[in-house]
Every structure is written in structure tokens, then in C-alpha cells.
Image: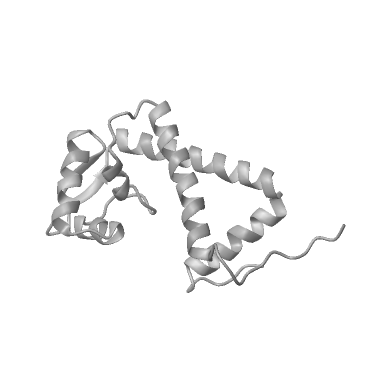
Length: 151
């Protein structure tokens, strides 16, 4: 029995495949957060919990990362502050307040990171560690094109 190579010229295309994988990752993150007791997060809050972690950034930068208006981001930042995940404060040389993670926010991020390490382990087990390493290398090269490629 011969195995033919996978087709690359038809659907689902790369964007759909990446989205489907991202949906799996996001579900794992949300489940892990809920299981760890972070039950007060709404779907909209997750837009601010992006890579890199929102620690020491301007609100306008969070808005840019989340692809939303500054007003919408500020509304969500205020909610995250009231829930105890974020705080806004001035640093010595800044004219505006920056958004920082609180201890609760750091604990949430650690929970998220642990779930992501679990995704890595599960996917490496599913497709093999060597293939998963190649996949990660390719994704890093495509996501960060200014970084030198590692082979």
C-alpha cells in the first residue's frame, strides 16, 4: 500500500488550518484557566491576553495587538483591572500610565503557559517530536520573518 503525499493545492488552505489549530489551543487555554479558578474571564478579555504577555505596555499597544480601537481596549483594560488581573501605573520616565500584570495576572499567565506546554507535548506525541520541532521551526520562521532561520 503506497501513501501519496498530502495535497497542497486545495482547501482547506493554510489560513483555515491555522485557525482550526488556534481554536483548539484557545479552548485548551480557557479550560485550563477555568479549571485553575479563573472563572471570571469573558471571551472579550482573552483578546488582551496575547503574546507577549501584556506587562509594561501602553494601552494603545494592547489595542493594536487586539485589532481594536483604543476606546474598546481601555474599556476591557478597566474590566481586567477591576477583576484584579491588570493594573495601570506610571514608570519613572513615562508620561502615560502603562498596563502591568498583577500577581493574579501573572498566575493566569502561568496557567496559560502550562496549558500551552501541554499542547506542545500532546501535539509532539501525536505527530512525533521531530516533525513537531520542524513545524515549530517553520512557524517561527513564517511568523517572525526578520529572525534568522534555524535548521
